[in-house]
Image 1 (spheres, rainbow, N blue to C red):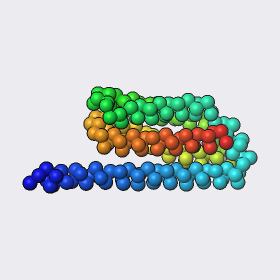
Image 2 (cartoon, helix red, strand yellow):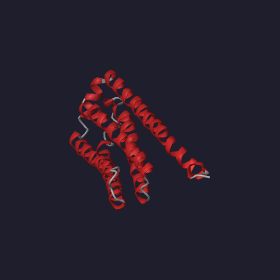
Image 3 (cartoon, rainbow, N blue to C red):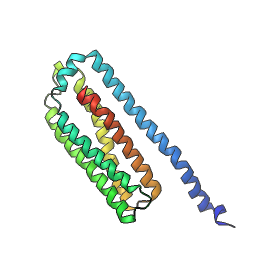
Image 4 (spheres, rainbow, N blue to C red):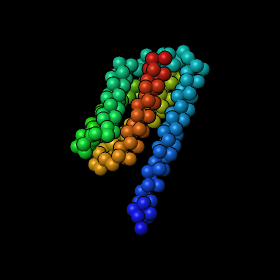
Amino acid sequence: MDARSHPIAVAAEEDMTDTPLLLWVLVWSELVAFGILLVGFLVVGVIQADAFAVARLHLDPLLAGINTLVLLTSGWQAALATRARALLGQRRRALVSAALFGIAFVAIKLFEYSAEVGVAGDLQFGSFFELYFLVTGFHLLHVAFGAFVLLIVAWQPKPGNVALITTLWHVIDLVWIVMFPLVYLA
């Protein structure tokens, strides 16, 4: 009996071939979910253009820009964890660093929310803040959960797990890069 016909080896090989499909299903489901939310935000923004314009004056694009840099730095750290030549310690440090930057993003966003929640109930803003908190809050939950998973993977950074979480982390970055100008700068 050779090693390739051993049931554990076959199962491991099947798991590795299934990972890319699972990864792409997760990636596309995330992109579709956020795409639907952002299209809804844009459509209502066209319908309630004046209310959205006034509501955007209560946002802090500078703070959101800083948060964009924090999230991109996190993505850079996640990318460092995927390097083929990275030693185990380097991989762990990069994943933990990516998670810590993700947690910093969450903290900054919650600080930003604290200033915005006071004006959110004003009827002159139409549906802006309901949609704003829905879209950015959904993203925020993804960042918080992703940071938690990055920490778990850092504990035992197997290449397949590192590739999976870092790819999803980059999708979360990509969503924010699209969301930032649509919500804050449009």
